[in-house]
Length: 177
Image (tube, rainbow, N blue to C red; front, side, top):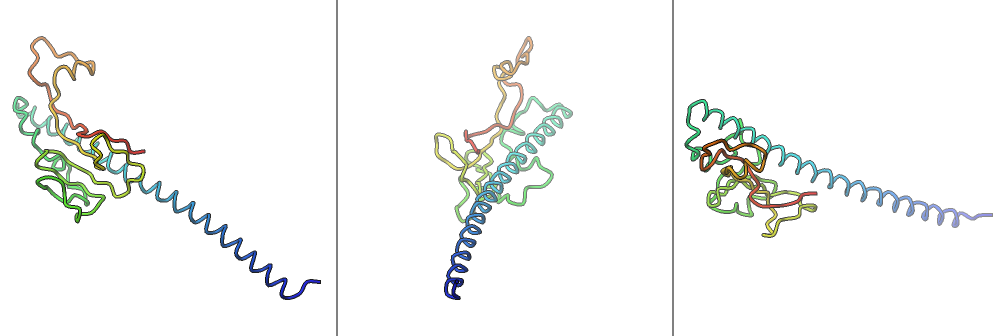
């Protein structure tokens, strides 16, 4: 026959085991939520860059329509954020160098010195920086030279110009996931 004391002891053990199982499940759930939050942040950053490339293409089309493609300076020094209909809500502005750390993480900013648009991730557990070790995604407007265009499969034509266009490219290699 079991006593009241034995039943209370078993109840405590069951409660402790149940709490341990629940705590383990919560830890796994939180880990997965952080993973998906970081993956969503990466997706939004890459989608923003894609939208900027579209904006650059629209700007090039405007220049062609105005017969101004021969003057690439109009886009080479541009801040790519201006090609969006409106800057993203986490755009902090232009700085002469890196944005101060007080600006926080999860922000876009334009480095006027390097002429690069940078994104500083908020969640970067799966971010692998390039050889320079900076944990930022950086893009810049770059001239597309005939050799690069030819390597992409396009023909430079009989009298190629010293450059044949511009593109928004990664300024620093990185891997995110």
